[in-house]
Length: 157
Image 1 (cartoon, helix red, strand yellow):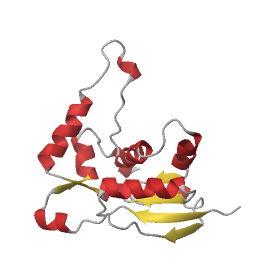
Image 2 (cartoon, helix red, strand yellow; image 1 turned 60 degrees about the vertical axis):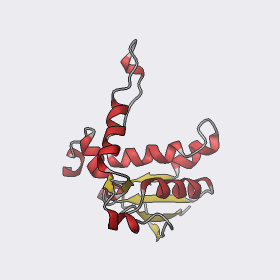
Image 3 (cartoon, helix red, strand yellow; image 1 turned 180 degrees about the vertical axis):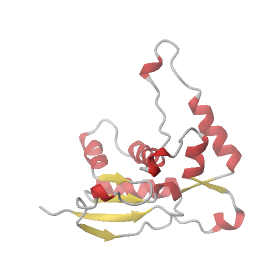
């Protein structure tokens, strides 16, 4: 059985709008491959965004820190978590939809190229930065992830 994968490029796409439309497509049964996750943008001032996510890192359990909460620091896992939070959590449909979404930091690695034989380039509408570029009120996902602790060792492999 050959599966058709939709190829989505996250470059210069607003993270929330992009992920909500990806979640909707996944719920409709489509298989999705997202590339360039590190180039997605988050709208807002740089200082406010950094303060928000750094404050989340300070939240932990006092009794047993191994119970979490755990925070993703890589751009691909960060974007996957955002998509996961937009799906029904305790339903089988949401878990199955998340399995249909594959996210990569930059491009598809060579070891996975054979998995995706039928890639159909697709677009997500109303998620690109238009006025944000003029006001310069955004940061990239790569910038945020390096600030909260990603050390980019995965890109060297």
